[in-house]
Every structure is written in C-alpha cells, then in structure tokens.
Image (cartoon, rainbow, N blue to C red; front, side, top):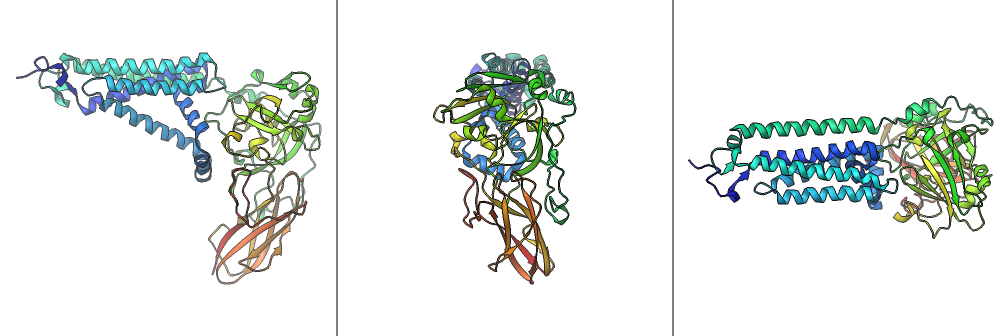
Length: 527
C-alpha cells in the first residue's frame, strides 16, 4: 500500500474542505488580530473598517448616488456585508489555489494585507502608528495560512494515498493536531475580535453626552403656531424627531468623541489662530434656531430633508475672534473622521445668515450620529457645503488652495438650496375614492421663503394650496388642498413659487452637480 512517504512531495495535495478551511481561518486570524491592535492605535485602522472606508471615499459618484437613492440609510450595512462576502470568496480562492503548495495563497494573503495597509495609510485622520493594525493583520494571516498548510501537508497527516481526502486526513495524531490548531485559531480570532470591539468602543460618547446636562438657550425661538404643520392631514410634523432625522454621511463607523477630548481650531487666513474647547462653547450664551437641512442628493420628491431646533452659538461671533482676513474665499471644515467641507466664506461670516456651531438638537445635546459634540449648521445651503458633523477644524483659505471631499467628485462649489415641493399624501399609485381627494405635502426654499404652492390634476389648471404658517424663512412649510378627482387614473403635480418670485421649473435635472429640479407628481387610481 502506498503512503505519502512513498509519494513524491509534489503529488501531495490538500482536499477541498481542508484547503477551504485554511483560507477561512487565515482570514479570521487577520481580521481578529487587526481589530484587536486597532483598538489601541485607532479604531478605524481595523483593516476591515479601513478598506470599507476606502471604498466609500473612492466610489464613483454614480455609484454613491445609486446607493443613496436605492438603499437609503442601509447603504453602509450593505457595503459591510458586500465586503465581507468578497473577503470570504478571496479566502476560499487562496485555499483552493494552494492545494499543492502554499505559494499562491500566500501571495493572495499578502496582497489583501497590503491593501489594508494602503487603506490605513490613505486616511488623513490616522497617524503612522495606526499602520500597526494592518501590519499585524498581514503577519497573522500569513503565519496562520503557512503553518496550517504545512501541518495539513505533513507526511504524518495520512498513512495512505497521495490525496489528502476526508478519510486520509482523518487518520493519525497529526489530524487531531491540525484540528486542535484550527479550533485554536478560530477561538483566538474570535476572542481577539471581541476584545478589540470592546476596547475600541470603550470611549463611548454617549456617557459624555449624558453628562452635558440641560442646554438652556439665552435666546429661545418663539412658540410654534398651531398651524405650523398639517400632520393630521398627512404632512410631516414641523419638527422632525431626532430618531427620524435623515442621516447621510461618509462615516462607516460613527465617531465617538467625548467633550473633554474635543476642540475646534480656527486657522488659516486669520489674524489670530484660536482654539475653543467644549467648555468654552458650552459656557457662552446659547441661541436656539429652527433650521431645515437638505441633502443635495435628494431626488425630486425625496425624503432627505428634515427640520430641527438647533442650540449653539453664532458662528460669526467665533470667527470674529479669529479675524478672518480679506481674500479668504472658503471656510474649509474638517471632521474628526477626516471628511472635509468647503463653505463660501462670505456666507459663514454673514451674521444675517444665522450660521451656527450647534451643540444641541431639539432640546437635548446633539445625538452622536448627528455630530456630537458639535457640528456646523448653515441655513440655505445643501448639507455637503454647510453641515459638517464632528467638526474639529475651520481653515480659511482660497478655493484653489484646498478641495473639499465632494468638490473633487463633481459637485458644485456654490450650493444654495433650490426651491422644491413634494406630495406626501396620497402616496404614488394610491387607490382613492373618486370625488373630493385631499392632498398634503411639504415645500421649501430655505433662506428665501415660500410665496405660494399650486397643485393640478393631469394637464388641468393650477389651483392654489393652503399654506401652513411661516415659522421662519429657513424652515420648510406644509400645504394641503382638496381636488375633484373623477374615476380613472390621474396624475397630480405640485409646484412652488418662492418669495423671490421664482417658480419651480418643470424640467427634471439630476442632483449632480448642485441639486435636483422638477415637479413632483403622484399617480392616483380613483374608483
């Protein structure tokens, strides 16, 4: 009977299950060790997170738009799942390519590890010490892959046949040794990942947020009028609850920043570089201001708009202390996660605009996912140039000196919010009873104000809708109307005219580069 000892070394070959297991265990070891080390050198230096962030930062604009439109707030979980699937498939491939010799798998493991190192190196919010995490992951992955492969291919792994089948690899003490090693790697990888997760998230901003206490503005907003919204008729509530406020950002992992660790530096083209701590901001007289925020990627009729009562300080007052110099064209804001935003300097400096450094939202400290400890809120501009979360730096410079995150991806430099309107109820293709049908919706022209809203059925005349009370030119308004809808299928459309006299265009325009245009319409099936 032939044995592995009788067979030439090159004929020895791993079975498919064993080769697959080696690839998966090497992947688990790399990710677990990388996650553990990242907990101590920078949580986002974990190779999995770093590569996912790289994908977010370098995805084509068309892909980003599709993800936001199709997946909404599920875009990041889907990305994580997709990346995990890709890594598993590559781990399987590494095993399959190495049934005779480990070289091909080692090369693939090395390439994946190098990708993790490059992803961490590319992050502006991570220092050089953070490279220890992906380097440790690479070393762990190669070590586990090589040692398990050598153990599985050892002459003592089987006592018959050149093929390491399930039966042959199941005999002898070396099979038990391989299984013990595999179980040890799996357990160690899992433990490393858990410890890394616990240690990496131990600096939980929620504890710091809870310690802030009540935020009492010195200047409060007037009470809301009774007809600020038509929620009972189908419009959204005037104030969006924090839990329902739309969230669009590039943060794969929500930054956890404690108030004692946060500061804001104002520098660049200024007379004096100044730095404010959270206590500096918290102890100033606070102002409350209602402002509606809108995402530039919002499609016609889309949901990426919300309204809140923000608490903070006037940004213009902070900038005055720094003394912004003539010639400064943009306020280049940087988030703690490295995201950047370019705001026209004249807008940020204008006291009449009402730009804020906000630390509160709807009567409580900012939620962590909405920028705690502090964020920028500037009325009238789309969020990508006006609403930096977790802000830590404001640099005044020229447009040609620094290019913010979205400007380099084809979006416009100047981004005033466009006049738009939306039908919220009935929903599209809704079945309604023929006769009087009530429609309700939302309209906005931040920092300009709304003059009127009109609705029509099919190609019929436009009828004026009833508008809610104007609370502020910086917030949305609601509208409702009753139309006579005969039996059959019909299309209802809405358009708005702002206080500057501009009436929405019917022409549809893509959100890129400076916001969508067009009338929102819904189809009604009247019976």
